[in-house]
Length: 179
Image 1: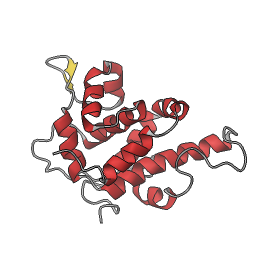
Image 2: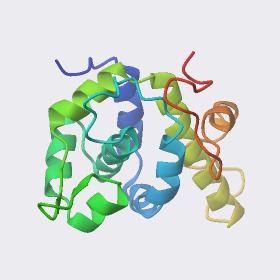
Image 3: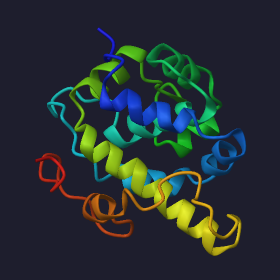
Image 4: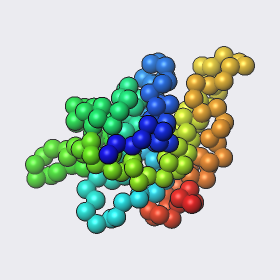
């Protein structure tokens, strides 16, 4: 069963897909920084039988949304079609015996998103976008008096609590954002 249209997860991914094309292109080169933020989102899955890391699944979903995927099926199709270099950047599981990346199914992404803490996910993606917008405005890329394309400041307090790059993320289920 796909996530309902009113799901907060769909809203976050929809906000990313709604960004102007120039902003989406600029954000895709910032995937390593995104992965650091996503590492702070608590994993709702039972650790037994987990094949793909939560960070790689979330990173794949966010990257697909930035490219323009508007549904879970489109996210699954995008992941199945991307080159190996992108899969490597997203931290996708590599099978050394088969010498290829194991691409997650759309159903894997759907099940993971259904149980995800939407507040922590929104804080992670929003904190990432806020930091990028702050850096962009500091460089003078945003005209004075105009709000940066995404983030602005609405995410800052939650992002500081939930996603602090350069520090070790808490164990799954121990995040202060998983309340």
